[in-house]
Image (cartoon, rainbow, N blue to C red; front, side, top):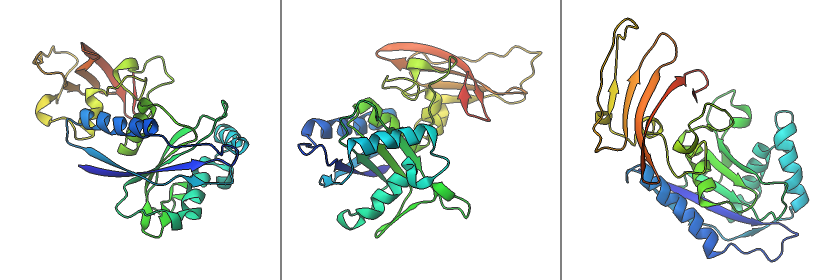
Length: 266
């Protein structure tokens, strides 16, 4: 119900005039408001803004990290964004207080048009976690982190934070939900299904069918006065989802199948 996020602005050596401005801060606060709205007030985000940390990193370093992210991240952790985040938290642990923190956002000051990194990291405890092992700090382990190598819009910040809640990207396919979900577009909206799996939608707004036969016709109704309603229809393959949602004041009726193996929408 309450999430505490530490935002750590970091300054590149070749950007000596960088300032983490009130406008930048407000983009994070707006992201928090978006999440409160998605959850109907059930989840509230508190941001803690750390002082800006000067580093020896350069724009060129961040450009190379972007190249590594695309081409070599699975080959060498030390050159990957995973390694970058883990090393940053270790190197500046003494300057940061992670007490009670649920997630960390590293907010970079890159001015390069080529880097543009916005990536979320979810770690867990497991003997074979490898790159996905938690980051150790003096105050405990960090399981959730986001790396933004330059300032991003409130929509992008919200998108990356939603990964920390467990949602996955839904863009990059012709069969995705498009403007109905922030995970597929820049629209400040989530699928009703996404809200439900996060516990932000009451089970009373969801109709789950069982023992469905393809030889029969079934009927269900939605209350038009309610925005977020879902019907889950199982099949021999992937289940069908029918839902109501609202984007920019317009109501939509959406229907799609859910690929349970990749959690992709069609």
